Length: 241
Ligand code: 6PG
Image (cartoon, rainbow, N blue to C red; front, side, top):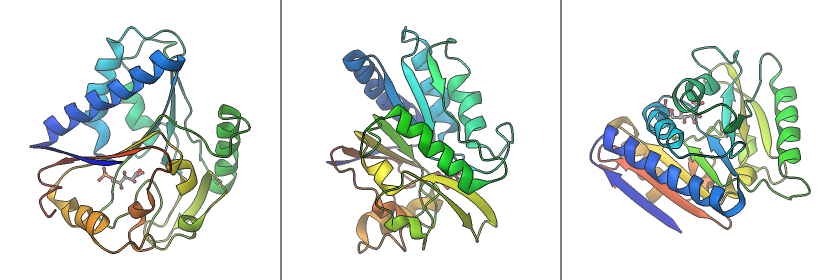
């Protein structure tokens, strides 16, 4: 099931996305006592995280209710301004009562392949004897080149069928990245793309309407096997649909 949610502007988009995420999280916590949530990086999610942090802080969650993971990370210190962990830590996690959550950052200081191995090991402990990690919610962004997480056009990891976490030197960025792989993303119960701005409108159109070619448009690889796919867009990002 794929659903598109269109909102007039970035602020209403952020608020609606946060409310959707809160509902999905609280439903899962009510069902099984815990929610496993994968967070996106980049700049778009900041205001959504601020809303979501306030909503979850008011949700009277029991200790240990939330497990946060990252869909990808830049190989920088966790307190670096470019860190996806730092983005979520200072916006979403900051207002949450201590003990409510456990954060599992991707620690990729200097050796990305080793960091990917380590993170995969962490996930396999979190989802023991599972063929895939069944995250309750995965939040993703979209690059203007159609990348998502750190799966960039032409990445060999787009064809990965077994590994859950990958490391790749992204030549156009001249930087190492660590990312969840398609199998890890597509095993989720709910996947949410959060995209805003005119600059992404063409990428949104390409991913949604152009021929299926994930090597050129990596976000097209996201097709939850047994889950829901939601696109949260502002009108600017949806303007070419
Ligand atoms: C990252 C992200 C990446 C991001 C998109 C959109 O580490 O950069 O995970 O996939 O979501 O590049 O980034 P913006 O929100 O900054 O446009």
